[in-house]
Every structure is written in C-alpha cells, then in structure tokens.
Length: 332
Image 1 (cartoon, rainbow, N blue to C red):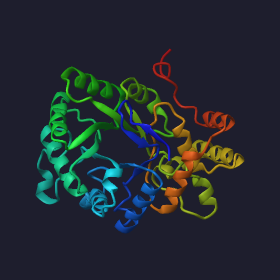
Image 2 (image 1 turned 90 degrees about the vertical axis):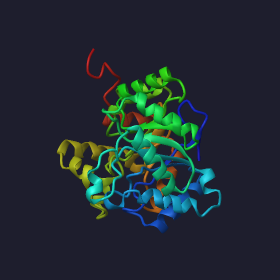
Image 3 (image 1 turned 90 degrees about the horizontal axis):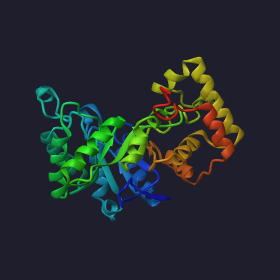
C-alpha cells in the first residue's frame, strides 16, 4: 500500500479509503469484519463511515459494526485512521423524530452526535470528524466553537467537510483562521470521478488553496465506470440507479461504450482504471472504495499499483474531457 499525508496535516493515510456504507444494509456483520481485516492486512489504514449509515430504522448500525470490530482488539483501533460524519437526523422513530435539534451542525447537535458516535464505535476519539453537508442556518463561528471544545476534550483530532462547494470551504477556513484555535478543515469528501468532473471547477481548487486533502466518493459513479455494459452483455448484474438512468440516454451509453472499448484495447479492467485515474489527479488523497465483498476489495487494491500509460490517459481525457478550470469553464 502507498501512503500520503492528509492535506496539510502530518497525518499519513493510505491512498485507498475503505468506505463502510454497505456494512449493514448490503453486507452482514461477519463479512464486514472480514473485509475490514483484509483491508488492514493490505495496508489500508483510512476507514470512512457516517452516523446515519445503516439508514432508516437502522441508522447507526454501520458505526456499531465497526465498533464491534474494534472491540476484538489486536490493535485494530490504533492502526486505523477513523473518519465519521455528522449532519443527518439521528432522532428515533415516532414522535421523537419530530423534535428539533437532532440534525445539522448546531453546537448542541454536534455535541450529542459525537458522544453517540463514540459510544457506537466503542472508542474514545475520532481522528477525522466530517460535516456531511453544509448547514445554511448555523454560522461557522458556532460550529468552530463546538469543535474547539471537542478537540480540547480529546474527542476529535481533525475536522473535514463533505459535499461542500468551494466558497463554503473558503468561508469555513477563513472563519477558523480569524478565531484561532482549530486549524480548520483538513479534508473535503466530494463526488468526483471520470464521468463527474465538476469538482475540478471550484471545489478541488479551493481544497488545494486551503490545504485540504480531496477524498472522492462514488469513484465508479454508481457502477457506471465498472464495466457495466460488458456485464450486461455477459448476463451479469444489470445496471441500476444512477448507472441505469445514464445508460438509458443513447449518447451517454455511447460514451460509456467508448470507455469500455478503450480499456479493453489496453487490457485494463474498467473499475481499476477509474480508481487509478483518480490517483493521478492533483489534490486527491485517495478515493473511497465501498466493497460489498472481499473480491471487490481485491480489485480496488490492484488499482493502487496500476500505472496508466500516457496514451490511455489521453484517450480517457478525450472521452471524458471535464469542464475545465474556473472561470474559463463558464466565462472567458
């Protein structure tokens, strides 16, 4: 495994991030534990989760699965850089769900959410505590005041953002700089892949300017970049969700077909190429991979060692040109 520093920090993390969103909803606890063991054995030390994972009546379940894995010992917790998130509503069902202050980024919810996550995760600290979404109603002065207390208490070490636009990254870190205390955001987790490159316009430049590590989520764009057409032809798993919607458009399907044809010519697996491409992009710390099975984890690991030729990179850029830098992407 290869490692890099997370943004401007001294924290060293693996170039692949283990995403755990499938743990619980798609993958049972025993298999989830096996995947985490395999990831750790392969050198992946950066694990990402969120308090809402498990979803619906089972929200919080994913953190609990991770906590039970930590409880097995074997220095599991010490070896892992643990990232989780706050924002989503964690109130229980029934009348409790209607009460305010159980979501978003108010000081009261941040305090409540951290303590609840620590309990589920069976740990006394979180390495990277991430804001899952912007909160338009809560000023950053309040957010950073709450974070300062948690850092002083030793409950969190670093803070990251997720799904932030570029101007909010700037606003958050400028506010942190004026206040002193916390060093501000150190990472941004955003939607970024070959087929979805809008982050290159504002988000990634802002992250680079302020020293945030970029952590792309959905690196295969919901399976679209994982050889979906080939799998359909071979009678495998059919596209669903975002991938199915995209393939329903003839021009988009032609684009994905060209992508798969290019990679077949170069004898490279599509999913591995999509991950390897992200590892070549400026500012990227490492993409989040969310394996449902051990086999999917093995495929992701091969991407770290995959070297894409200049010819292949040029071909990928022709198929997925991206928006270009801002403001030239929309102005002169």
